[in-house]
Amino acid sequence: MLCLDVLLAGTGLNGQDPISGAEGSRRLGGSRVRIGQLRRRLFALRDQARPPAGIWMPQVGEARRDGWPGEYTTRGVEVTGGFFDMIDGG
Image (cartoon, helix red, strand yellow):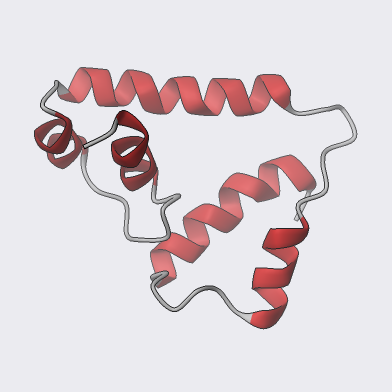
């Protein structure tokens, strides 16, 4: 399994319920510590790249208006929306 797949599954940004660090490490064949490092790095890069005025994420707005893809879980929608709310102000 690719590192990105595990990172998205661990954060819930793949639209599914987030998996635990233990499950992520099992899938990746690494340690829970490494999964945590990857997750922290993702959020640090997001915060670093955020312009002062925010960015426009029309896909998130469209999903809120028209509905999320059918395979997204309730928790996956919450996590994905929250990740981008911090960027575009909701």
